[in-house]
Amino acid sequence: MPLQAPLRNETELHLPFTGEWLCFWGGDTGRLNYHRLHNAPDQRFAFDFVKVDGSGSFYREDFPANANSYSFGSPIVSPAPGLVIDAMDELPDGEPGMPNETVRAIGNYVLIRHKEGEYSVLAHLQQGSVRVALAQSVNTGDVIGACGNSGHSTDPYLHYHLQNSGRLQHYEDESELYPARGIKPYFTDVLRERRGILKPAKSCSPIKGDILQQAEI
Image (cartoon, rainbow, N blue to C red; front, side):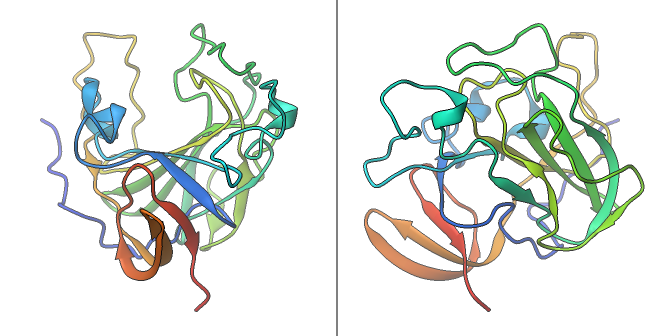
């Protein structure tokens, strides 16, 4: 029987990156968030975050390559205190536009338990970048790895979602019962630019198009 998921997080979460990033996918509708269109109950409140320049480009040059990406290699941090209960960083990074569908969809990842029923999944990390070990305690802002392009990602970006179970899903197995359920994350003390207007937000669950950074507190 699937565990009941709370409506939102109880743990205080900060953004899982440093500096300014774009929320490329996020929100409660399929138009805002393609994760809502898939049969993935753990990811229905997931976000994809990417670094862009002033024109909205993912890359420093016209030719898309990991080396030209603003995101690739950028530090990814723990959004809250917790315990690392699973991690992988052995999968190779793909080339932009060429997702590696022969490996696990989320690619390299870190799974952090914040409390019973609240687990952060940080995915598509760079091969060999994971800095934490199983059973290691982490604090808010600790670097856990680097943004990569592993798994089914089409470009370097960070996939983040919060779920109510410490078990990751294997969507290749159609017989699986999908016990994990997504929790809608709200991040604390965020500077959010939406439609050209920059405002501080004490509690923020981003939507597609928001430009975000952690506020100085």
